[in-house]
Length: 114
Length: 115
Image: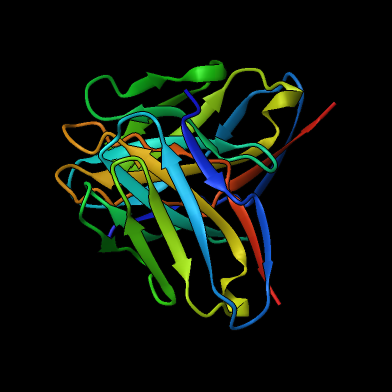
């Protein structure tokens, strides 16, 4: 099992460019999440998908869109990148039902917007 | 709204010394509590979790945490720190019956270990 995988690992964008961050999980989890991590801020939820076919906004959704492509894959798109979106982005997944809320995290994508 | 506070931004301990990382949460109902560890350049790994029952929970890598409802705390402890424990530690909370997105993280405590 690879767990949660993310591509790319690193990316540099110019202001105004667009890109999509990819995330996939092989644990048959129902729920998936995108977080951003900034120094001194901990992790903040951008969007999540409780189950295939549904997505919801988290704490900091502005400037992002997501697609739950299928049960395995959950992508994050920046339509017009801004320097404020320079961050480390983590994807996570969880079973999503019952009493367990344990989330499993990918290795992260380090994004720099110049 | 629920929140998590980790009062210590950075802690340095000597190898072999004991460790306690503090976490306080703010929420009226019964929370689900977690501690995650992040090694440099890595994703987050779950150390332990508390859902209910015994308030002292054991985790991986020799860590334990104690839930104290009266103090709204969930402090992480380890009796003897190893150099490989140097990392950043995050406390997180979610609430029973909450939506799947309701995992709230503290800002983290960075642990340095002196030889």
